Structures are given as structure tokens and as C-alpha cells.
Length: 174
Image 1 (tube, helix red, strand yellow):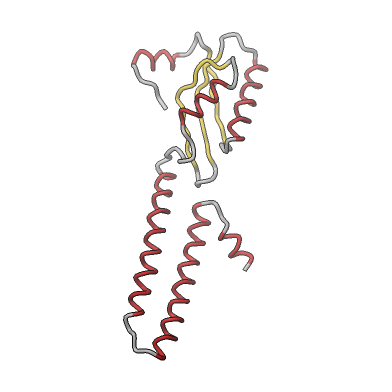
Image 2 (image 1 turned 60 degrees about the vertical axis):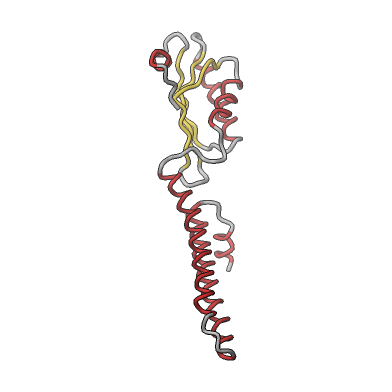
């Protein structure tokens, strides 16, 4: 029983799918018992297909929502709980050393573990210690927002070919 309760409260897609499967099985067993008991006393054979349709509708509704979420994970879509522009603004405004952010990617592995990578343009003459501290601050900021794994590429303001290429092409990559 304890294992079932742990699955019921799961947050990962796979845990919720297993919980849903167990719930669907339980509903089917209960429906069979109830209909079987009623049919012993009343001649209402329509109850069986009605309950079957109700359970099928419940299952299909949940399959659709789970499939939609799974497809977002497979396609590495931005998790619905995040607005990419807001994250970019928070990162840029987190330190005066940050001049620009580009090539931003945010996705989830399992609906819970979120991953982010981006290029950060900083002032030209930063020391290694300043860069390490800046990365720690930004990673801490993002971790507090639920992004567990962050990869930051640092680029200098005057030596940033990616920024120059995206400006001349008129395209800003995300």
C-alpha cells in the first residue's frame, strides 16, 4: 500500500502514468463488481456498456493529456511553467557584468528536471574569479527558479563572433 501511495504522489510523467494505469484498473474492477452485483437482482444489461464507455472516456482524456506532455519532452519544448523572455531579463539584470544573453535553450528531461544552456556576453576584462563567481550567482538564481542543470558559455563583449553574426544576419537565436 505504501508503494501505491508513493506512486500516486509522483511528479514525473512515468510515475503519474503508472498511477493512472493502476487507477484505471481499479475503476474497471469496481465497475465489474458493481454491475455484476446489480445484474444479479435486476435485468439491466445496458449498465455494462455504459460503465465501459465512462471508463473509456476517462482513460482517453488522461491519455491525451499525458501524450501531449510526453511529446513536449521528446521535442524538447520549453516547459510550460517558464517564459523564456522573463528568464533572459532576470539573467541580464542579475549583474552589471552581463551585457547580453543569446543562444538560449531550455528543456525538460522528464517533466521535472529542467535544463538550460546559453551564451552570456560579459565585459572584456573580467578575471577568471569574476567569471566563476558570476556563473555561480546565475546558476543559483536559476536553481531557485527550478532549473536544475545550467550550462553557461562566456563570451567577451569585444570578441563575440556569435553576437556579430546574429546581428548581421538580423536573427536572434533562442
